[in-house]
Length: 234
Image (cartoon, rainbow, N blue to C red):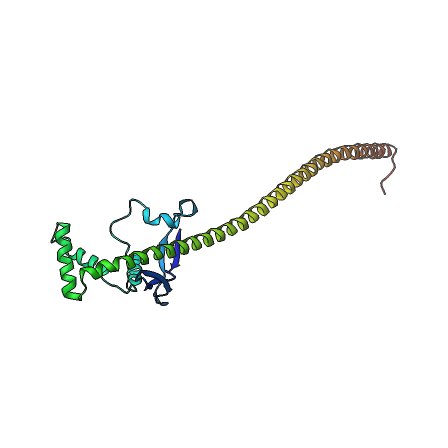
């Protein structure tokens, strides 16, 4: 089932408390004009509780481009930058430098030269980036659960309507079948009446024929006798 129109409702911008600890405050950062994102959802039976999304196994190492962009937009709101620049630089160096430690050293130096972001600043940004990801996971889970419940409820309403239509059709079929049986019975009775009429007709014809033959014969006999007596025809 495709759930369309899911947009991260809010990205949380960390703010510093008195102790210097990064906290999460609600602050929408996603533009209202951002196009809807299609989300593949397997339905209620396979729904993943929001606390376990990050623990899912067999997830592709390559991020989904649409959600990667949304997460990056949210991570841009973290005051202390460095995480996104670091992972991008590590990706660039992945083919050229195979050793992960050497690749990390080179990436840190490149970021400091290009962006003026030091290793300490990058390390400090990781807490805020982690908090942001946790909040975005929560937002995503709540949004997709809400959409799933809405779609399921809508589907269940449709099923109820279809069930009502099916029951109405079944009732109508039973009525039609009963009416068909009645008409067949009536037809059989009429057919039997036709047979009775034919038998009665033959009886009446035979009775009429007997009377007709009798009189026809009597007329012929009388005519013959009158001719014998010389009674002329008039």
